[in-house]
Each structure stands twice: as structure tokens, then as C-alpha cells.
Image (cartoon, rainbow, N blue to C red; front, side, top):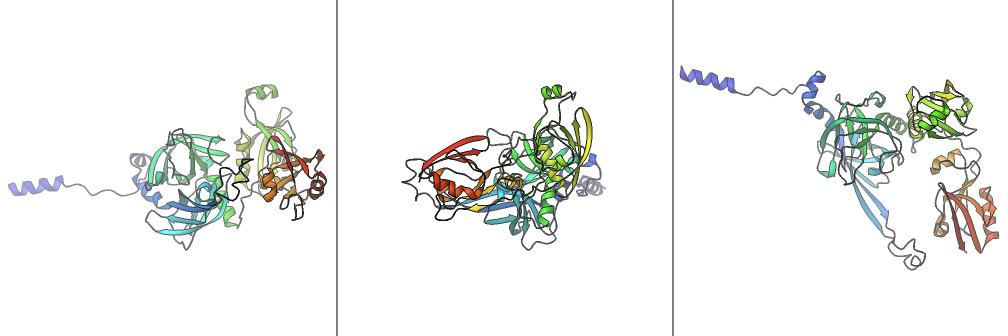
Length: 458
């Protein structure tokens, strides 16, 4: 009897089999993220990228020593970068950050199960800090579904999955701390972000920010920090923009295309709100509307205040551009705005920047004063390509300074306004104007919001 009693006690004390079933309710998920991570983690990858850069001499810009060290220190160097990415489809479409894979000559993607793939960049954009990759020879890959980021709310539980500091795939948890964060991310990314307190560190860039259903709501891109480590203020690029990138990449685009607004605007603060009689701050006050803009065709004029795009409120020009971008060229957006104290609604076409007037692009030949200098007339398409904001409707922009122009101090994007006091009004006239001005040449240029004078002899 004693032996039977001890045998029964051993059976009762034996551990129960582990339950590996997927939680069926929010309450069950909140007890553990393990089942969620098991499903989502295989779709998050590590990315190793190499790029060759040209090292510059520290004396290159020195007016005296630059001539002595011109042929030194210009050796190619290999830079390695480490980041993360997210597989979005079974055929191996991957999203990551541009600063991880941009201009890379060799990209290696390592999956959670240690499989490795070479990858090619299909579409990248430095301003948005997004890149779409294609894994070579991939099929039946684990992938994450996209959730509409406009449905995300502050306070939702989220997980950040990536490869911080190269230690291996890591999962951290937190909540959505804020939405519509614009102009707060570091690096090249500009626009609209989801803020989270889930710890994000170097190496997490390009990793996944997912909800408790395992859907991708954002791509981790940057943090605010003074020490280099996570302080609980991280930013992710919303999935709505990721979706637009994937669509353009699949359509064969090699350059990301944004709708052109043709507007100059500013946020409406409390003072502006009072002076405009709006009652509360909010919206974007239009300071200028280009005649060729679709907004002008829809009846909007300078002085109007745009309140929302497709029902989503906009409070900064960056938010407005984001809303237009996720709609995409060829679509229409519903614009709510205030004009002369009356709230109105207009349907505005999302159009590409027009290449009008003709750009009249020229490159000066070997016999010119500045051989290799490339110029074009400023129009909306050229301004978009060169990243020029608020450029004058008439002007000539430097698209490539060439070797001699660069030595004289010219940069891509400079707007050439005058040569020796004479106004420059067409690219085709620049060569003749430089010849008449030689040997002492004075250039008046507009560089961003600054006026710069360049003086040199040829």
C-alpha cells in the first residue's frame, strides 16, 4: 500500500505539459508575449551592408593647404553598417531604413533561422529614410501583415523587434506614446512618426514595431538620446507610408514619387488662430499657392487654412505632405479648409510636379570657363528632384557643379541669380555671361534661405 501511495504522489507531482497554443483573447495575450513573438520574429531579419566611400583630405576645403594636399587622402574606404529589416511578402520583399542600406554595394540578409540571402535595393528614399529590398531566390518566406497606421491609438501595447548593438535578435515591449510626431526624428528622415517608449537602440533601425495581433504598424528608425542609448523616446515610420513604398517598388519605380502640393504654409498657433478668428489653434495657413498647383485649381488661395486631408487633421506642413504621400499620385484627396471664415471641402487631385516651363538643361563643354558645370531652369519637377523648397518661379539651378565649379565653391541645388551683377534668366546664357565676366567672376547665388557671394579668378 505504501508503494502505491508513493507512486500516486509522484504522478500528482509531475509537471503538466506546457501549453503552446496561441492566446485567443486580449486578456490571454497580456499574460505573455511569447506566442506572439514566436509568430512575428521569423519575419524580422538582420541586415549587413557594405558601401565604398571616397575618403576626403581634412585639408580639402582649406583655401591655402587644399592645393598642396589635392592628390592625397582621396582613397576609397569600405564602410559596414548593421541594421534590421522586415519581410513583408512571401516572395521576399523586405523593408528597412535607407541609412542602413542606401548606396550599399553588398547587402546580406540573415533570417532568424540563420538562412542567408543576398539582396538588392528596389526603391530607396533618403528623405523618408525607407528602402525596399528584394531577397535573391526567396520563396515562401515568413512575413508580417501591415496594419493601417491611422487606426493606431496612443496607449496601445507594442513590441519592437530588431538587432540592437549586433547582439542578436531582441524583443522589447512598450506602448504607443504619441502620434503625428513631425520634425522630431534624427538623421535624414523628415515627416510624420509614431512615438513609442519600447526600448530602441542602434541596430534596431529598420526593425519592426508590431501590435498585439502581430501586425506591422511601423518601421523603427531613430531615437532621441544624449548618451547614445535608449531613453524611452523612439520613433517609427508609419505602415501607411511603407505600403506606398511597396506599391511603387512593385510598379517598377526606381525613385520614390510624392504628390506635388505647390504650397508654402505654416502651422496655425494660438496667436494666428485668434487673428484669423478660428477659435482654436490647428491647421496649416497657406502663405503662397503656385498657379499650377492642383490646390489652386480646386479654388484654394493664399490665406486659406487647411484643416484636414481625407478626414485626418493636419497641423504642420510635414503632416499635410505625409497625408498626400500616402494617398499617392493619381488619387484624389478630400481637403477641408477655412476660407474667409467659412469651412469648405474640396476634392484635390494628387499630381506629380509638372516639368513646366521646360528645364532647358545644359552642361558646359571643355572650352567653357567652368567646364562640366550643369544647369537647368527651375520648375516644380526640377525643384522636387533637387530638394529645393520655396525656390523662386524663375531661376537657374546648379544640378552638377563639375570639377571647376566645385573648386570655385558651387554646390548642387545652388540657384544662380547673377554673374558680375547681371541677372541670370536662362541656362543657355550662362556660358556667354561667364566669358564676358572673366577673368574676375562674381557669382550671386541662393543656397537654401541664404544669399552667398562667390568671388574667384580664372
